[in-house]
Length: 333
Image (cartoon, rainbow, N blue to C red; front, top):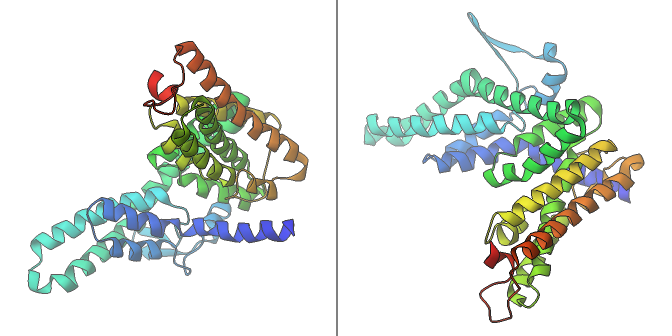
């Protein structure tokens, strides 16, 4: 049963391959363009007739090329390509606005989308796709240096800064790195880092829950935001509990994540897939590192609670009663 369930969730995790479609939609909309056109370019980015990027990374010699005189463009898709999508979306929105300005209104319905799509796709494959991939590769190199070259300390830094990336929305590129790790090595060491970083935010939420001893509304919010972290969703804990009144609980959680990350690196915890963390991550962690996976997540969970209590005690601010404006951290921070 567990094997089938793990396989099922592994298939679900392939949705990250189509991430550029979602990123194009949201980014083009954010930049003031037509999000429907963004979807169309996003679909081009993962077109099935193009070579899968993960396959290309493993064997670049297998790619075919479009040859336009001195210009050769690899026929490779952009699975998990967040940065190519963001850069192309920015360019696309600019082109659309310029086209709307200069194309006569009577024919704008036809020619504005046409011009925008043509120029956006050309820019994608010639400029912003390669540039975005380069940015992703540089960041992947940074992650490799942190985790594989700097040992336990690097893993601490990586895990500690992972959720700040989530806050800024720039974390999605890591999914592509994970997919490449699984495809090339059969293992994924980032999964455990993801898990401890998320569980640590849950620990922060529980720390805030315990601080609010007599404030039922705050306790309910903290507890309800903790539960999603068990299945790999950290945003409720981050925004509803750990960053609601101050940045300090979030920092405590990031420190806990770093401690958990250092621990799972020490014991080289690995998974055979991606997309599953927390309790669900038990399904894809290698059996020989399973106990260390659990221990690492437990460390990541407990450290923020201890730090939150220590900070609150050091501040010397008592919790409030049911009628108070807040408790512990929302006052002392």
